[in-house]
Image 1 (cartoon, rainbow, N blue to C red):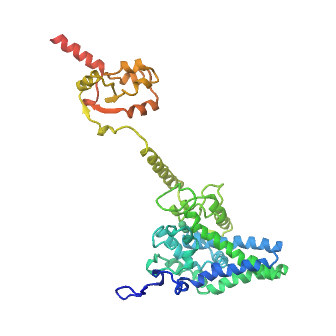
Image 2 (cartoon, protein in one colour):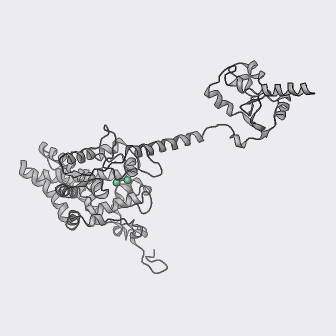
Image 3 (tube, rainbow, N blue to C red):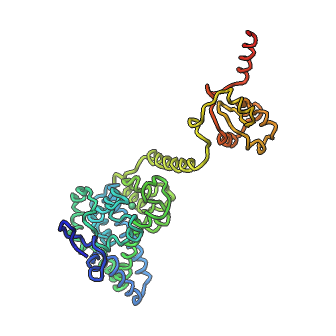
Amino acid sequence: MTETEPDGRKLHISEQPFTLGNWHKHVNWVNTSLILIVPFFGCIAAFYTELRAATAAWAILYYFWTGLGITAGYHRLWAHRSYEAGLPLRIFLACVGGGAVQGSVRWWSAKHRAHHRWTDTVKDPYSVMKGVWYSHFMWMVLKQNPKNRGRTDISDLNEDPIVIWQHRNYGIVILVFGMLFPMVVAGLGWGDWKGGLIYAGILRFLFVQQATFCVNSLAHWLGEQPFDDRNSPRDHVVTALVTLGEGYHNFHHEFPSDYRNAIEWWQYDPTKWSIWVWKQLGLATNLKQFRANEIEKGRVQQLQKKIDQKRAKLDWGVPLEQLPVVDWDDFIAEAQSGKALVAIAGVVHDVTDFIKEHPGGKTLISSAVGKDATAIFNGGVYSHSNAAHNLLSTMRVGVIRGGGEVEIWRKSEKQMSSQYT
Ligand SMILES: [Zn+2]
Ligand SMILES: [Zn+2]
């Protein structure tokens, strides 16, 4: 296989097929170590390490802190600017978010902004169109073609000293907050250094990583689309439970700068609850929220779209503008020649096949043949149901010139003309 294009440009590794000789060049080894190799050895070590109750409780607590570092920090604060945080909260979120071992705030937010800007296209860094496993983690395991990079504006992130500090010292941040800090707490707290490293450190970040990855895979694959179905994001309670509330992803892609993902009080969104508590404590300000009116508009439009699609599948009869226009006398002539035609509201209906099935009996409907039965149909004899109106419209065969013929006028016209002749 040639490694250059006809114009002499060297092909990027991602453009070359996998071979026994080059597969290792396809792999991004830094990412793969952090999300697969280290967690793999952590799982093996767990078989040989006793899990103590205090360490388990600490691992779960630290799971929530580091998870919130990603959801409330990386995602809703830095990637979407859905609220503002003071210095102490920003330092806390940058540290515990770093402890989730998912890249620096700057790297993560740039990718996430590209994901929103280019959703489901080649420039979406974790496009679910390339497969659910690709969007979950393979996009990090394999080297990506720089040609497909979706560029976004991150000038605001470059002005945040906490973001810059964390980006420059990212190696130290993951070492300290990913492993050393959880180990030291368990070690100094109750003497469980090894358990602290394995359970509160490595296994805990494995779980946080997999939970976050579910936002890119599961939330674009499982659930409902109440606000817009043109792209892949979906809402599902299972994804919300796994991701600290990031599972209302259809809403989130529509209203990305809203600090909430779940808009109903009973939906599970601990990230939203935390931001709200931080606001009460004076740590967060300017929580952004779309107006309920705008949210409802999106919901109603999507409902309407679904209804229109259902409606289009049903037989509503030939549209009036496509029906032939017939003269009243031609209508009478055709009815007399044996076709069971009935005029109702200016429209001719062929009821030949329906006479036998008419719920009101054969006689009544037969008596309307060759006549204008508008009044009879609409209450003169019986006010027909909506279902009857629908059924009638499927029997339309023509429109009467001039819009209709009312028997009484026609009769008086005849009488008048007979008087003068
Ligand atoms: Zn998404
Ligand atoms: Zn987002």
